[in-house]
Structure formats: C-alpha cells, structure tokens
Length: 364
Picture (cartoon, rainbow, N blue to C red):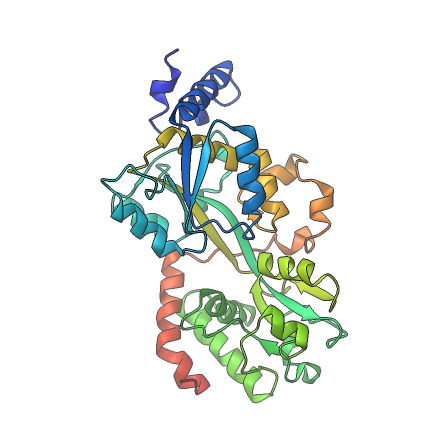
C-alpha cells in the first residue's frame, strides 16, 4: 500500500473522510503506530477531564502500543520545555504529544517545536479554535461557573448581577489572585463582560470595578475558593472552571449538596489545544492518538470527565452525545452563549490586571 507515506503530510485522513481510501489509510497508520510500539504523553493527570479513562481506552484499543506517561502534574510551560530539552533525544523523556493552554500553540509553532497534522474530523473543529495549517487544534474547553454550597446558600445565584444582593454577604470567592491565576483573571474578565463592557482591557477594568463594589458590599470573601472552603462554608459560592466544579460536586457526593451554575449574563470559555512534537520519537503513534482523541469515542470520554470536547456542537447536532452524560451537566443552552476571548484580548486583560488590580482593590 502507498497510503502510509502520504500520512506524514497535512492529515490525508481529513481529505479522505467518507471514502474507502480512508479505511486503508487508517489501517496503514495503525500498522505504523503498532510497529513503533510506544506513545509518550506528558502532563495528563488521570483526574483531569477524564484522562485516566481516555488513556485506558486507548491502551485497550491498541494493546500493542505502550503509553509512557511523563510528569502528569506538569504545566503547559513544562511541556514546551520538555520538547526543547529533548530535541536530540529519542529516549523515554521526549514527549510525542502535548496538551497545552491556547497561547502556547501559536508560540510553539513559531518556535518550530510542533508539526502539522489534521485529523479525520478536522471539519468539526471551529476555525477560531485551530491553526489553519494544522499545527495545533482545540481539544476541549470549560466555562467559568459558580459552585454553590446548598446547605449554606438556599437560593443559588444565577448571574453575576445576583451576587450584589445582600443575601450573599460573606459568600463569594475566586480561586485565587487574578494576577497569578488564569481562572481568577478570567472570572474578573467575565464579570466585566456581564456589565456590558467590550473585550480586552475594557472588560477587565469593568470586572475590577465590579469586584471592588462586591468587596465594598461585604459579599466578596478575602479567602481563596476551594473544595474544602466551599464544603466548610467559608466560601459557599466560588468561581472555577465547570469541569473542576462538577468533579468536586461528584466527589463530595451530597455532603454538602452542591449546585454548579453557569452565569446567565456572561459565559467565558477557556480552550486547550493538542499538538504533536516536531521531534516526536513516535510520530505515527502520536497521529493515531490524535485520531482517537478526536473520534466520537475520545470526545465522549472527555465530556464524561466534564470537559466539553471541541466537537461538542457537531456531535450534539448529530445526536451522538449520550443523554446520561448530558443529564449530569448544566443545561446545554447555558453553553450556547460561550465567548472565547482571543489571545490579544487575553493579553490586554493580563496587562490591565497587573496595572490596576492592586491599585483598585488594595491588594498586596
């Protein structure tokens, strides 16, 4: 067969979708990946987005391919550094694939650290969440939501506007300092959009004004929100990504009962991206891994772990989302208004946070 040689280009599978040639190409890719016999991942904790089950399913489907898991608790920056440090190393410390925050994709491409590949389901990935040449592509996203301790807060807020009500005194918290934590910075950003501000620095500054008012009313708690603090009632309402809150809700198992609410007046999404290392020791195993992740099976496993897969809308339209999984999530319409801030908007917001947060909030 000649198909395999073509797979090193920009995802022949994407152009062969729906044809008999696709099956041949996929068979060639599987054979080449099995011959390599290994896939090296990095920064994939098993309790994040259901990755434990994702990895187990891949290993069950391809038992001939060993999965070497590097540093599950590493961050996006660590993943990039691992590629750089192992450019000339084909050993077990060289990652084949990475899963990183959005901003790391374009930079890794510019630095020549990743290679292009388009999966068979490429067309389902929104243009705004992928590199046109296939160097990086969105995999899943979360939206900022509120975790609410129902033992303490009998009537959960449904919006940012609700949080100004006196009944939420000493209740509201963020995961941490917005100058050092992305989820907290994006909470401030979302609060700004809820007031009608436009994106970028304007939204961030409006969000700071919102939080300053919330602090003056006595509703903003000067304590980091966490599962422990929510359970103890110290921060009975706190913001975080929905997948973290939903997993926390399940772990608490009703003690206390927890609601996860997506604010009706501002839905901010944060997307992660996949890429294959330009120096991948096992490039075909890496491509096969991508095909698995972007298949219906892989996407469903991410959703089962409470991360919205990038193909969610297309799969839902095709009736491919299991109803039992949807039942565990906030209403689907809550996600329909999701806004994906651009890299430029996030950069402007980060600068505004550094310039104005401490000055306005009196924070050290």
